[in-house]
Length: 150
Image (cartoon, rainbow, N blue to C red; front, side, top):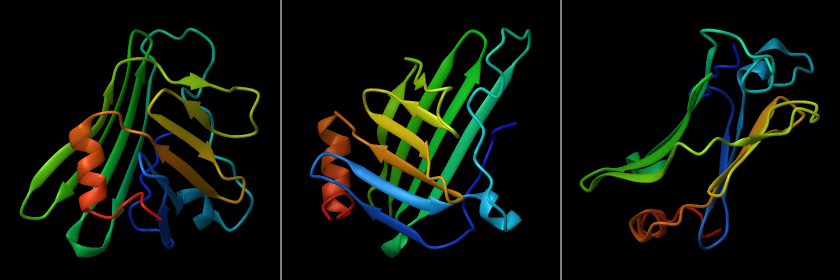
């Protein structure tokens, strides 16, 4: 499946605008040492009984910060969640939606986009994630953590 956990791969760069966070991290495809694109989500565009597929990303940032993102897809629902854990302050939900992300199946690799998030294959074995949370608590958490402000 398209499931990918990119927790222990190459270096991570995190940046973004005042109301978002963008992260780029090497994907498991880089471990294969050849050009590999992350497949679309879901992996099949055909209606398939029992189909389920998911993506998972984990970012371990300085100061004990932990950012996680999950996209879960079945034939009847799609759930996208992202959250940030701050030591001493707890966990803040950044994105939580059941609105399906739009998939660009013509793209050469994974490309999903919604109101608060974009996930795209970087073409070089990496993935680019752009979070644009709308809740005041999520924006405040990212600012406190100095994530997304350059």
